[in-house]
Image (cartoon, rainbow, N blue to C red; front, side, top):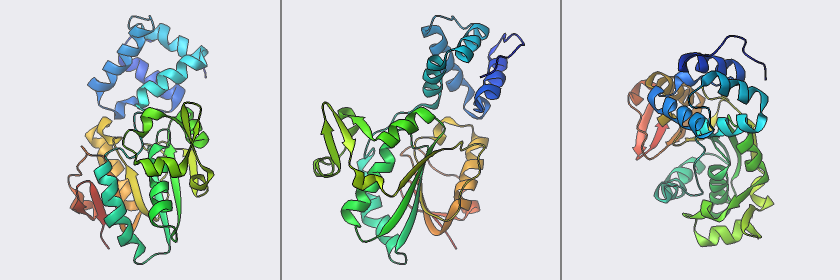
Length: 265
């Protein structure tokens, strides 16, 4: 981390300086929402919206920087979040993909601490044991990715998880749960910035849920186009339960159910 010599006097200057420090461009997020989150964090840590003092603090304090970064990237999720939609994935989407393929390539974009990734892995292990697959889990926050790789979670993370899934694929460790190795073998976690980094190609399913709701409309348009380009023909984009894609026909995406979009040939 390097110091910014110019004094930071307002929010816009802070955003510019933080981009140089972290690579995260906060201008691509909804300004009112992001500004409120930042000011709340700054005030709660005793800086009273003094952006210059706060910036100097996070450049010299890794723990504070990590806490602030996690606060900005809004890592809130759980296993089987919106359980009804995961049931649709299990009973309709994946069986459709399996008709013509013996290997499926999945991507959980903005995967946070890995709950969504392991949810998908548990569905494959439980209902499609003969289908080979790979899952890529990506997030911009290296700290949540560390937890994802360790695979240790609080009991509250499983509020929506079927009991037999929890018993079969997780070990109780004191008052927490750890993912069994059987779910880890086909999974890769890596750091990735959705707004700036290159996307891999050839995915059969991309799950990006409850992530783009924080972005500007311009950033959303760019992301959905990149997601569509990364799907194989016939592949699916799985969005969050409040995220609708407008202009999907221009992306060669067809709605095939609530929050599921299929790429057309």
